[in-house]
Length: 236
Image (cartoon, rainbow, N blue to C red; front, side, top):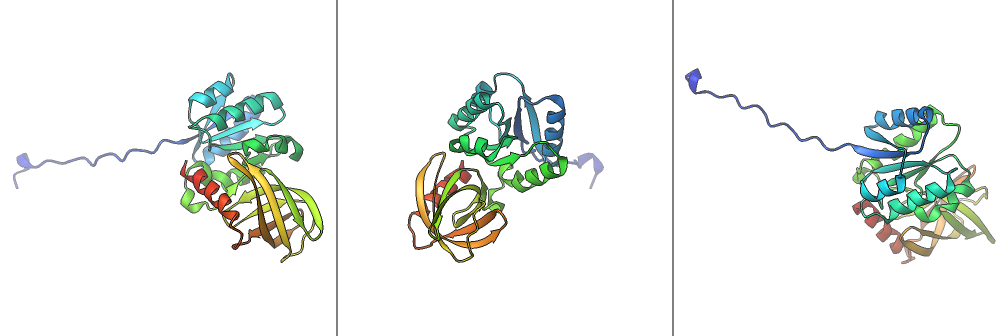
């Protein structure tokens, strides 16, 4: 064929998916540098937020938000703004510092994970690696939701308070100092963001020092409320 009549069509560029963004609220330069390095390593773009964070979280969409739990009033305002925003109601919230009691103070906002102080790079990378799929919206590969809320645990003639670590439609993992034997029948009670308090029968499926896992009773229809909440969380 005559070369004068041939054309070479350049392949159409594949549109790049917008990077997931994490709002880093109110951190000084050393903390911001360490946090931003960890998120960038997993393809998440850090955004420094130094003024009017609550207003920004109302207007702009972020896939994650990182804030210090030591700044109680500001943190609560930011979380309330994010959870009340249509675009950020399901963003992944990371708390920095503070105690378990501090995290429980904000449990109604559904803090997903905690960076413990002093910030140490290996532990930070491990945490971001564990939660990155949720931030990147790769939900098909992420069947458990990391979320922290206060849980009442009743069983073996005891009633104790625990903290949720991860939750799925079939069960949850908990942080607790109490030791329950594998196979023990228990009942868990908790409320979470848009999920009103729910009580579900469960059985202890594994235990480790200071943590354990429970599997919801498949015959307890109340567990369906948890499944509905998780499905809604992943769809938004």
